[in-house]
Length: 247
Image 1: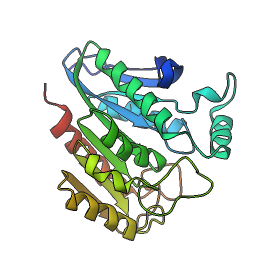
Image 2: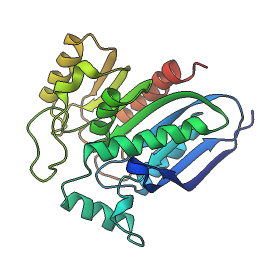
Image 3: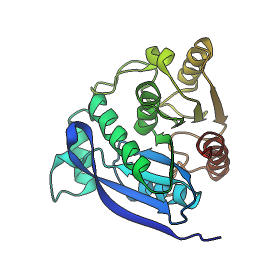
Image 4: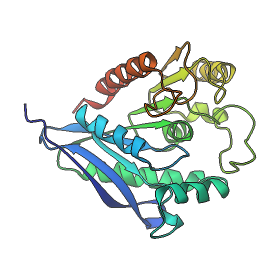
């Protein structure tokens, strides 16, 4: 099997037609395949997120992470851009929707695209993923410990209002992966989201991990939990295979 993968920084059209940075990884095999938009977390468009993009390409998907903080300024480091955006209260939801829509459109233009799109995100990216399931014509959403979907607004992140009341608008299957030691979201908040999805008769599956807290997928942090992360990646692979591999 031909297993070459290309990873590169690109430019794509985001919200309002703005040209933004993105990180793309894709198999070079011409066989049709689905695409995955990776939404980065609050720390920004960092090495860890770009590794997730490459991992998804190795799994067989065209994967693209739009740099949501691209507009902060030319020549600024990714870390400085993230700090500035956090100080501003985060990125407005409508801008994130536009950037992710632009990334999905880019993936659909690739010669080996089967036009099916999934979205995945961690932390704030998990919240944004939930938002995309209510806003965009996608086929699958993976919410990895998405905070601020349920609960009171967090003052320092003024752009991130709770989204649970939008559950009736969810239009695709959702996979949720959560740690039972997390405080963001808490297990009780996950219960609330699970009930809302059940009451709205949505297609979803949640998995929760004992002994895991926030950022249990992050291998460079003390929060990393290998058993939860390995199982989580297996579930992500199976979920995307069910919903993105159709032609």
